[in-house]
Amino acid sequence: MPFIDHVSDSDLERLALDRVVPGLLACGFCYVDGLLGELAGDAVLDQVMEMHRSGALQDGRLAGSVPGVHRRNIRGDKICWVSGSERGCEAISFLLNLIDKLISVCASRLGCKAIRERSKAMVACYPGNGAGYVKHVDNPNFDGRCITCIYYLNKNWNAKEHGGILRIFPEGKSYVADIKPLFDRLLFFWSDRRNPHEVQPSYSTRYAITVWYFDSEERAEAKRRFRDLTDHYWGCTNLRSVLMCL
Image (cartoon, rainbow, N blue to C red; front, side):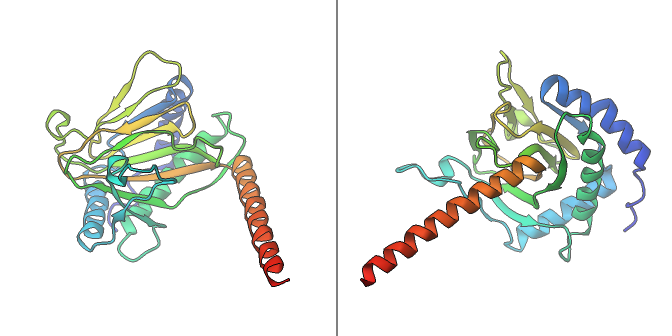
């Protein structure tokens, strides 16, 4: 593709050290505008819009349910998980590789134990019908997610008219941070309880791509807890089956 060589490793390192690391350490969040430029940003947007048109985006799930509360009252986005290797995701793959390089430069300077993996990319659309996402924390229970990265794809976005602001409530601070979901903007923030956040109602189609980077030790411990819980569940199930046969 014609845009893949326009960002140098030295540019990324300078961006990471001058903007991302100081922002995360001082405030717990930061954003960078003009990350890819018009050509590459348009290529990513085209691929996301095609996913939307094709019906690949489905209602976002909730980790748990609240009796009497409809899912859309909590989150109203439609999503799809991609690795970037899928056909038609070449520009998204380029974006993910660039973010990977940025995080690899940042990781050793952020006090994180080790960041060696991330999630797949969550491509998300708020369809413009007033849908949002209520205040929440990405990683409230030590599941390994360390840094949240959100890339926005919304041209000519007017927050007063279109809404869709991501509002961060930094822990222990007397202020909030309102992040407009502007085209070619990349947002970083700590995924844990330091940064509760919400997506305010959107009145125009709003696109974003999110990836989460994992603290390797916390992730391994979370997987161990899950295995233990699963083993316990199946042990109890098998015991019940045995007792029923006696």
